[in-house]
Image (cartoon, rainbow, N blue to C red; front, side, top):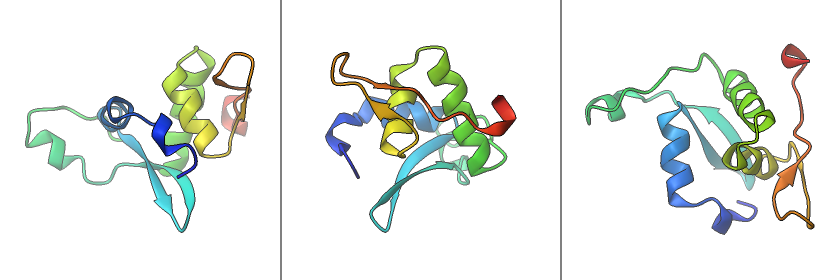
Length: 100
């Protein structure tokens, strides 16, 4: 996973609490909707169900556009934004057609 060190454990848990997570698929980082949210429900954590991986990406874009660094970083790791060396955070998220 590109810059995996930057994807902190708290981001991993926070993303899963939103119903999505980053996964490495053949060396490519993907944003996927969680299919197995029952694991969290067993622990008393209510997780929203995202309908598809595309819905998970759209959720990340929406949150990134509101300024969330976690979601910007997820989009960057998924190659859907670029990285600003000046500010040290990913910027210019890719915007799906459904959100334009």
